[in-house]
Amino acid sequence: MMTNGDLLIGPDEQAAAEQQIVEQSKRIDFYITEYTVEILANKMRAKEYVVPRYQREFTWEPERKSKFIESVIMGLPIPFVFFWEMEDGKLEVVDGSQRLRTLEEFILGNFRLGELDQLSHISGFTFADLPESRQRKIKNKSIRGIVLNELADEAARLDMFERINTGSKIANKAEVRRGALAGPFLDLVIELAEDPLLRSLAPMSKKQKDERGYDELVTRFFAYGDGLGDYKDRPADFIFQYAKKMNLAFATDSTLSISYTRRFRDTLEFIQRVFPYGFRKSPSGKATPRARYEAIALGSYLAIRERPEIADFGREQFNVDEWLTGKQFVDITGSDGANARARLEGRIGFVREKLVAA
Image (cartoon, rainbow, N blue to C red; front, side):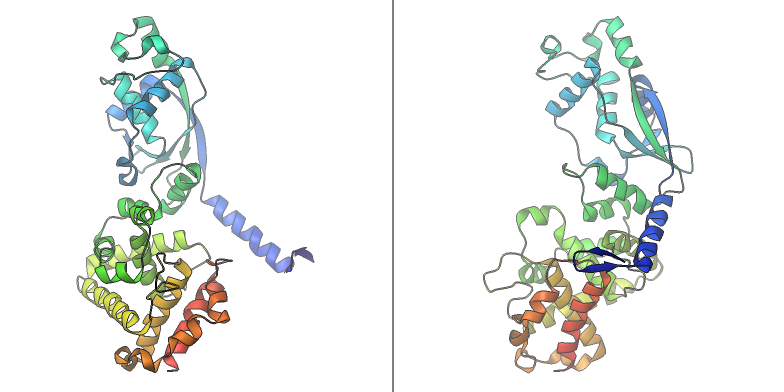
């Protein structure tokens, strides 16, 4: 029996961990290749490389493009470009679209280099301004690529994109879903993310708003509210697959948009009436802890579904102030292990039981 702090790790836990490692590893099958700069630029121009929508709006500023081209000319190591082999043989760019677009713009376009640090004498040059011999040498330089096979699913590719770009200015999960899973369900999520009542009950910083924080809250409300049967402690994968499935369902049944909108807004109106600070911790709170939001939003929805008559009750009939500040609620909405299924079900169930018992 191994120990990890106070946690006992036995054979069953080790076996489950090993199975998870094997399952996740099977999602990624790839081969390594190498392309010349000339081939990369021409394939971008010919649209042989497909840039996903969630990457298209993130473009480098001219200074960063110039620095990248300077690195290529100097022969400095360039990070791998990651592709996914599509069914039609084209390659989707999982990571590296900015590098590829910059190469195309410089080699085949009219991009003019800005002020360079090391190669100051070619500042202001276009590719055509370079001697032909240097043009050939640049075109012949190579960049290595990793190609995922066509069996890698969307979630695996997006997970790789996020991991490669950790710490960079990239699309987050909600932004990725907007681009990769455009459809009627995501359209509703985007619409409800603008709901004034949601924004008043769940304040966020400008940074969180810009990063589609409200999209994330709305999507989690529906995904968790429809059941956690397939949830395996990885909210990103679970929500991605849920959104993909619901796009198809909404496309088949147009009335779903009406019922889901009603579900969401009825729950918010109940929370506004019953919970004194909405999803805040205090009257002056300017943040919305996600675990607290999940507990109150989903607990309220499930309680109303179980006892529809409580939807018309007032605050005085629930006495939420007493347990909202209690140690048990504070503990179950803490951040430790917040995405574990047991913790998620625990905090949602706590609120549901308190409301149903009113």
